[in-house]
Image: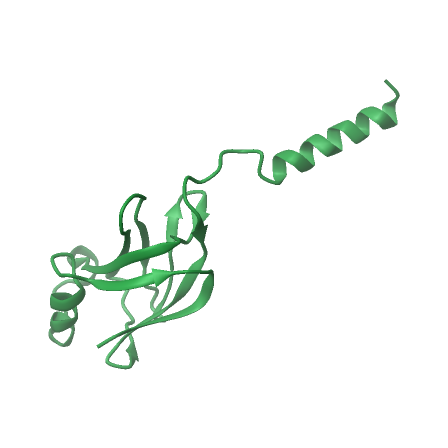
Length: 135
């Protein structure tokens, strides 16, 4: 085999590997990022963990809220996002990070926390400017 032919084969193989010949995700997952608001104001606390639990089969996604109030959902170590379809979002207060939950947020956790019905939503497409408005 001539050197330039072998070089072409190696380049093609690298291109195929880089473009997804690896393992596929079992569900359609789309990138989701944005802001969660409570009564119209961004929730700004790194002591809150967010979980997005799909209805039916699938695996949850999670996110943390940054000090500026933004979040980016993570499906797995290899993929950011949330599984497409209906899901329930729940919040968890991380007392070891933030100490006692602020009094003004107690109603938010009663309504959308771990032991609550949560916030129902449907993920249809990628959205990097999502606003989840909690009231």
